[in-house]
Picture 1 (spheres, rainbow, N blue to C red):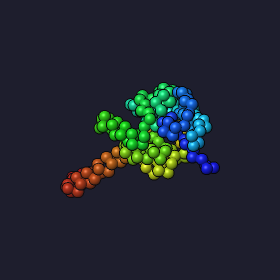
Picture 2 (tube, helix red, strand yellow):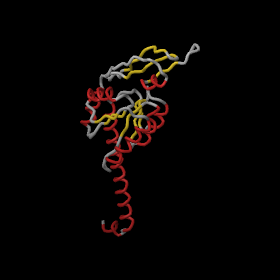
Picture 3 (cartoon, rainbow, N blue to C red):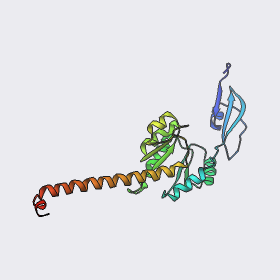
Length: 205
């Protein structure tokens, strides 16, 4: 930019480029260092903003029968743990690359019982591989990337995470109705076969 090479990244990048940076020890935000050529320009602090209904949404999921909620994120550990504590998340895995997220889900799938299903909620392009791999992939339709939306099984068009519990109830209701219809159809076919094999039934009745 304007004849200068701009470097934007973590402290490791500043060291690699011999830029004399001033370390920022903020634990509640992700710190991004900015340099131009060999001059240090400053830092950018990126903080996650927890949605107002996030805590209640996770509580509703717990009440609906979800056994364990795990947060997978690329943020640094201190930031991720701070957010997880506020949300009441059971487990947090931080500083993950996209491949690490897939490995984490693979591990969760192996340790979960056959009767359980693993769902993953994500909206970024890096979430697409995980959305494909898990049992149920859920993407946000409004703010989500095209890759995440295409890879997901379910898309929440208004990005309201409080509807996750509602979606779960609808899914259970739909499966229940489908099972009843299947049982009813099979029962009717069996009765039809029985009546067809026993014509004398009609004579005596």
